[in-house]
View 1 (tube, rainbow, N blue to C red):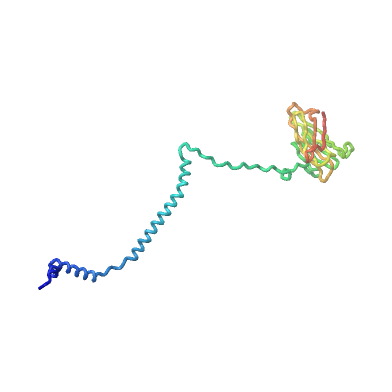
View 2: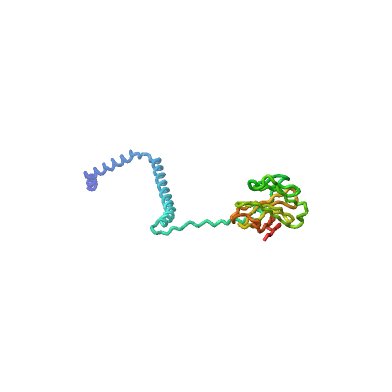
Length: 246
């Protein structure tokens, strides 16, 4: 006689369950899992890391650009005051030193007998004896002023004047001598104002020279008292020799 429990367990339901267990066990025994896709997993990991780095860099760049954007926006706001760029410091021109200043002029050195044309028809030349000149009124009759006839003392400062002219011009010249230093310039006070002339000398150190100038007449004609003063200055601006006529 069979045991009651055994009969119950061997009923139809129990038999089906046992069959399912055997089928699953057999299927599990025969199942072979496919190989893991390691290469694909590695590629996906690289993509994830790259996206994370890009996101971090983008965030950093955004943080750097924010201050720049704020600066630009502040300058472009309506009604915003625009700060003017700082002015460049004013450059101060160095004052010319004494060594860089132009030297004072000195007389033109001429050879004995060399003619100097002061104006058309007005020529001068020097020799060891003195000054020669012609004027437009007497172009073929040279005039002469001696420096060796004893009329001048070349050891004492002095200056002379000779003048010839017409209603439009006065031709002025004279001998200067005896001053200290080196003669440099001449100023002639006339009835029409101050006229500046030029100086010529012979080579070496003769101790004398000749000044000349041409004055434009404005007062109605050159007269005998047309010149009031002749002053020759040296290279230091001091008076080398002077003549006062009135």
